Image 1 (tube, one colour):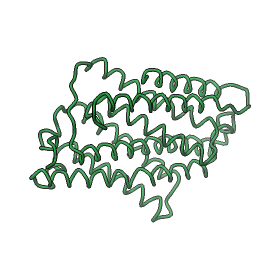
Image 2 (cartoon, rainbow, N blue to C red; image 1 turned 180 degrees about the horizontal axis):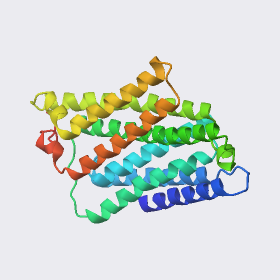
Image 3 (cartoon, rainbow, N blue to C red; image 1 turned 90 degrees about the vertical axis):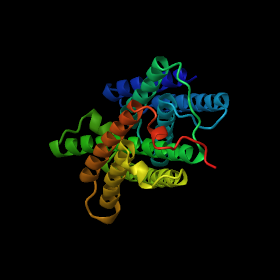
Image 4 (cartoon, rainbow, N blue to C red; image 1 turned 120 degrees about the horizontal axis):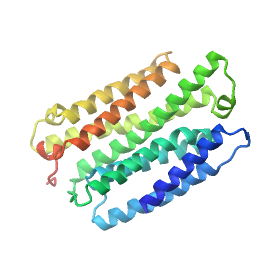
Length: 276
């Protein structure tokens, strides 16, 4: 089922890119319909996997990447519906979703015999909140890239078909703000839950922060705090905020790479056992 969802995302992305580069100016909802179809299949896949495993969340690279892709599509569909954005948004966003989904599939083939361990409820909540936040950050990244592209076209006075089919700078800025507004609070709570779980396991609350993954999580939080400051507390918006969201998501990807490359990280700091 997840493979079918990935194929739907891929088909939607290909159609969106083809429409973006074509001379036909008619607006088509097909890419978004494909994204919605993939999302529905993806939802069934997640539910099936969770029912099969016997618990809500499993701690494997595949399940994490799959859930991250699902969260990203959820934020995309929500923002698309709220802002009635043109289908060009799908041509930028769906390739990112396909990359996450394809990586999940690749990992599932490479580590098909891996046995998943069940997380205690606090660390499961930490993981879920963090991945939903990452999904929102992925959307903020895409809108940030689109903002920079559109802003460059305005400065260069290039008003071709790409310019005409992309959302306006104002709409892109609003979508970026909404994604950060969703992602940052959830990400903040996820870090607080991780620190609380560390303390509950009998270790110092700083034990998780002092781990490589925890330290990167705090650095990522600090960077997005700067984004929030730029967005809501200063007059510096638009281009500077877009650059920060792009940089922030690059750090998110690095953090995910570290997480997948360090096996048993959470076990080493005593966070995998069941909470009493």
